[in-house]
Image (tube, each protein chain N blue to C red):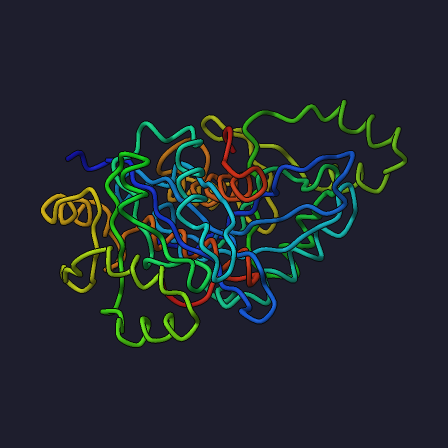
Length: 186
Length: 186
């Protein structure tokens, strides 16, 4: 894989779960872990179920679409519990998807919350997302991507921290836009 | 000067001059020309006269303020004719200011337009901004900064193109947020 393989990093903006109905989604188009070449955006419903469709649309209408070698998500859900169907995202775009998590998710707690909220289909989506692998200091889930390939993509893109640059940058932009100044880590 | 000297790059978002009253201003906090460490935002009035005050406030309230070694602006005006008083910006923040322009500005045309619109104070601001220097492929204006120091800051920050990375990145973010996907060059 080339060191400058084009990667899309996706993160959502902070939101107020009592007030906001929509959340801003930021996509950063990166050359490997070195250079930002473009920014794209969409919105999804807080706790809704349109994240997969919205992200597929954002990716497919992008001028960078045909160049993309991977899509990286900062966690499997955006806007609270708007869970992304990563198999569907990979299949619809024909691009490998890697979910990046700083910590191993508390699956039991998440699933019982979703069940309590009557969001059983999302419990299924989380189950469907497959095995969680530990790679160095982060955890990942994969769709349309072998573990070997994912490790290679992480090596290329984690140039400044444990978090791939496309995701780290999407996080900074999303927070800066929403809060006036970025805070905290991806 | 350190290769990772902290630089703030500022650009405005695209706007509709017939509809929009406010324009989004993006500030990128960079380590030299290599790494984005933060994003900050403010707004200014289209064709208004609050850009200088708004940018001073954004810079001074930032958690990165004390680390900044330079402020770079993509042109001397934001939101159309909201001209920045770069001497005032440099004096109020005690940070060197560099205005970056891809092309030599058509000063005669700009001044006659401003005069026709009754914006004479802005003509004075443009005059006050001082000599336009050509450095490599770009043009710059300076406040609180020697030409020698400006050249050093450009050398550190122009790692991927003729345009300093902080400005190039601010431009991509501003366009991506406003248009859904970034277009064109800073």
